Image 1 (cartoon, rainbow, N blue to C red):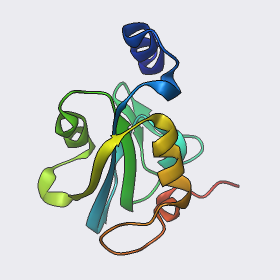
Image 2: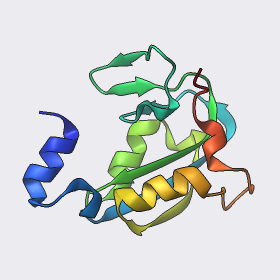
Image 3: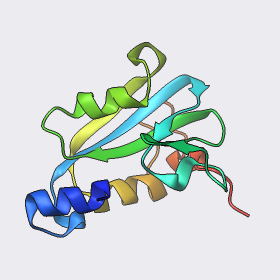
Length: 120
């Protein structure tokens, strides 16, 4: 079962309607990050059982978690000393998608979509 199916089964609602937390990570020094989202990964993606690796070192990561303690999920993206949480608010996957597409980093003002992998 995929993580999406697991969350839907747990909450009994469509994934896009499940409340959680949206977060933005800012990396002062760009980092290669592990993610369940392929938006940051190369084609074909490098992956293991925990997710995809970003195609290149990235400056920002936008994510969503339904975990009660969002920092538990956030810490799976790498060591805390390497990044700063610059946004953490209640929200849904829809809110995450909006942030990914039109959001800017609250710390540096860069477009968050600029960290996505280039697609041909």
